[in-house]
Length: 305
Image 1 (cartoon, rainbow, N blue to C red):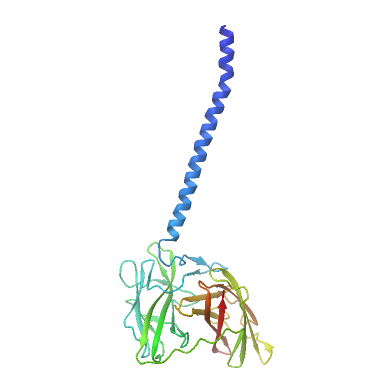
Image 2 (cartoon, rainbow, N blue to C red; image 1 turned 90 degrees about the vertical axis):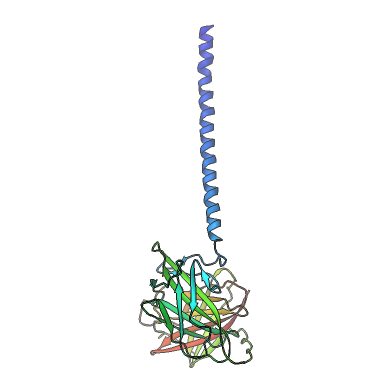
């Protein structure tokens, strides 16, 4: 009898071991699942911490500069505030500051396409485009060398990369509505077209792949007198600069060319931009390119589905 009981006891040992092993694995699996779920929940919570939830940092294809991916319509984002000194653009020059999360003027910025600050002005009918580069005083006051704008309602945008308190780069576009005294009717936005001309150059845009809210290629080609243009000079370290504004709410998008910075003295005739346009509808695109030391600005309307 003792030998039989001993045999039964020995036979039960592997069974108990198996049960303990399964319990341990189950506990580990549950812990891992819980950890993974918590991680995902944290990611979701972080992505919705700001009302303009498209403003998560992204990098360009070559990883050199972070990019802002929002619509540019907020005056305050991630604790940073665009603080103009006045709300009129009737006279030359526009003065403003960028206030940090502590309420103090920010003085630490990183360059984006060779500049610490890009400043844009656009009228409510998507005309009157200006893109300039302000200078900053020691106290964090910026002065943008804008031209006096005619009567109407406008929006001004400050595009920059701030240095966060932890040293991390914070790419942002902040904006505010401004005016110029007087009254003038809005002009209809020019109809969508595949090409436009400026200063004798023909700029052709292939927007067939564009889809709102998705990163899609936007192809641009340059020609003059029927011949491909191959003497595009670097402007802001790339062969062209492209920004767009949405009809109605004036949402803004700044597009970077694929391939990063210009690596040769001249480029062309074809460029491809990575376009992430946050909304469907009409977009008025302003393409700036340089040849022979002269800056040209071409404008074309795109219909984005």
